[in-house]
Length: 50
Image (cartoon, rainbow, N blue to C red; front, side, top):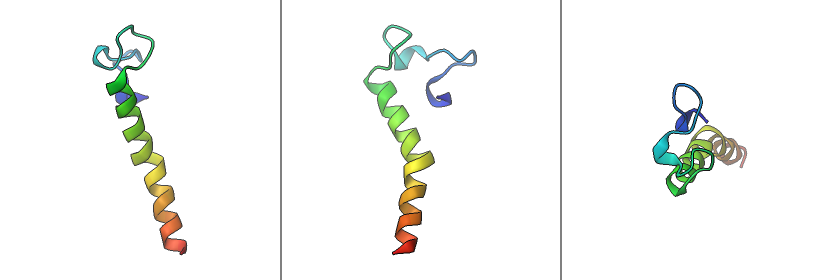
């Protein structure tokens, strides 16, 4: 995800303790990004159909 990546595509150090796996903050950023870019739109469409 661009939200957690540096210019070369690697994980930003503050989102990973080992450079390969997300830490708690990295997971929070990914979840917030997915919600904002996908889930929120789906919920809006669902609400409009009701």
